[in-house]
Image (cartoon, rainbow, N blue to C red; front, top):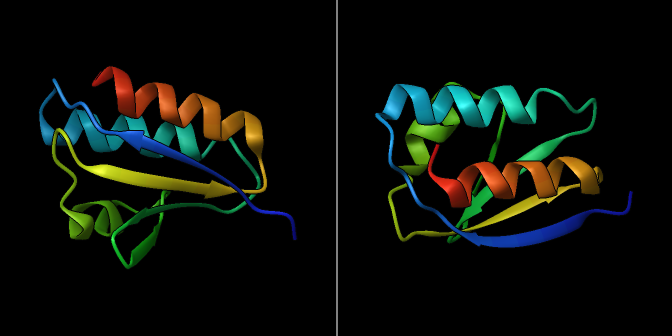
Length: 83
């Protein structure tokens, strides 16, 4: 496996349910595993409970991890745009 990573600063302008929905919908476009990591906690980006457990807020630095470079770019755009 050749995992790629991208670091992003989160900007969240929507309510939490819309934010989580946007992250999951984007991550779910990939057939590969997609992870979000904040600090030492790494979760499946397709998991509602995982995203809630990370407690992602505006200004947080997160690392995106996947074998699918295209989905990393798309997910980075979602997280950085806040929408």
